[in-house]
Amino acid sequence: MKTATVGQSLTLNYSGNEALNTICSNLNFAGRNIKKIVITSCNAGEGKSYMTMQIASNLAKRGKRVVIVDGDLRKSFIIKKYGLETEGEWIGLAHYLVEYNTMDEIIYRLTNLYDVCFIPIGRDVANPVQLLDTNLFPQLLDKLAQDFDLVLVDAPPIGIVIDAAEIAQSCDGAVFVIEYNKTRRKDILDAKKQLTQANCPILGAVVNKVTFESLGAKKYYNRSYYSHYTNEYYRRSSKKSSSDDKKK
Image 1 (tube, rainbow, N blue to C red):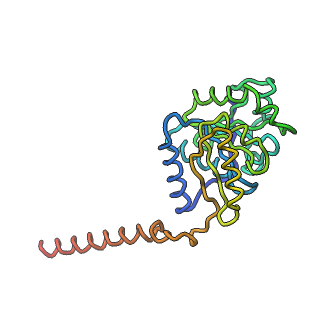
Image 2 (tube, rainbow, N blue to C red):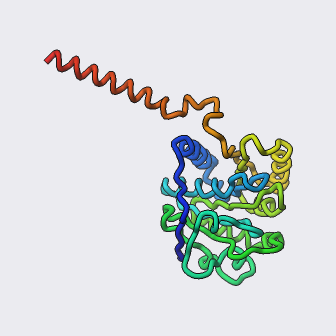
Image 3 (cartoon, helix red, strand yellow):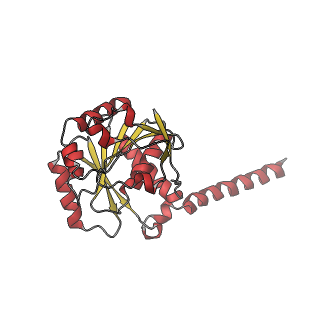
């Protein structure tokens, strides 16, 4: 298997990491038969690729074998945005769908991301629907689902092009990434309708780009919540130790 590295750090702050843990735990609860998941959004720039990378990293850290399939054949940003590097030319999904390369030849192991595996697009395609609407794509996902615990397909925004709906037909479930306080309700409902027509169950939505200060439950999840009890524990322990010393 070919190897590659990720140049950009995916480190999250405390609140972001806790939110990601919740998302990944809920995906685990979705069921063992949910292995092929398409991740999409209504519009560009809502953070779907970022969430795909974060989810893959988190689950791989837990010991899951995860593969990311870059399904944005029109204009992918993953390699450039996250600084992915490999030796030689990227060979990927487009090469597989035109039968230039086999599945084994398009999989890369990200050695510095908990061994997450990655299938790039290989090259941009002017009309990817023609390639996605064949037996080769669902067959690829089925093969990957046999070899990996989870297959994450980073699809284009479903509110812009039809590619995501084509991809969704071959998946067990979908996750929406919605930008907080920006994405219109109508756009979300239209995207939901397209996924429903593709017979792809919607597993849930990730509300992205939320400022922690805007959350009503911030005091509960804030570190200060835990530090309050931690400090109280140490105060009690300290008092108990002093009392024991006096008795002695």
